[in-house]
Length: 203
Image 1 (cartoon, rainbow, N blue to C red):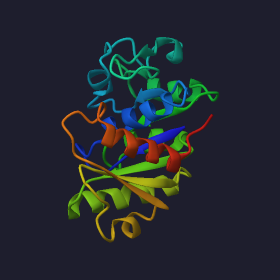
Image 2 (image 1 turned 180 degrees about the vertical axis):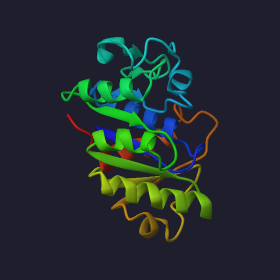
Image 3 (image 1 turned 45 degrees about the vertical axis):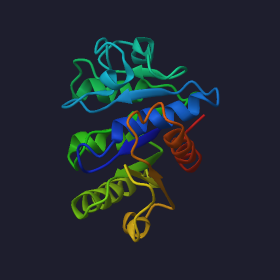
Image 4 (image 1 turned 90 degrees about the horizontal axis):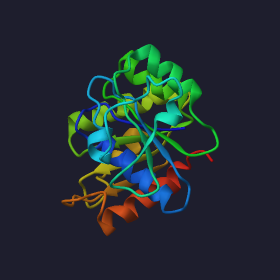
């Protein structure tokens, strides 16, 4: 499983999760995106699916819905789940297809929970000292729970800012250009494809 994580809210984690999933779908992989942000869930809004049922469903994968905006991508919304529901769902997720976890912001137990289930992490950051500092903390947390950062996604930038790659400590960094509709633009599609190459999600 691949975690999409970042210390700061609004850094572009959800869009990045869906963008990477879209890149995998174009390779005929049928990815599943799971909304692990129980306090501020919004994958269902971006993907154009219903909020319920979600990860609290008895069989989470069966509750997944096809994303309206990304052909070939399935989405499991947060629904009305609590932390115990999410923990159970993470244990029940498939291992024979790519699974992308949209993680909550911060460094709390809620943020660590999906990271512990993941095999690797995409750290999402924006330009600016506070965002980079938060991303550094996220990368450290990911390493501590054995989901090492494989790539940094830099949201809304034409290029990777100097020093950011070294600060985060991931092997690669990819800039995601700022466009009006990032899930439908050719420029961002190329960036999300590069992220998927660097992240190497399961299956």
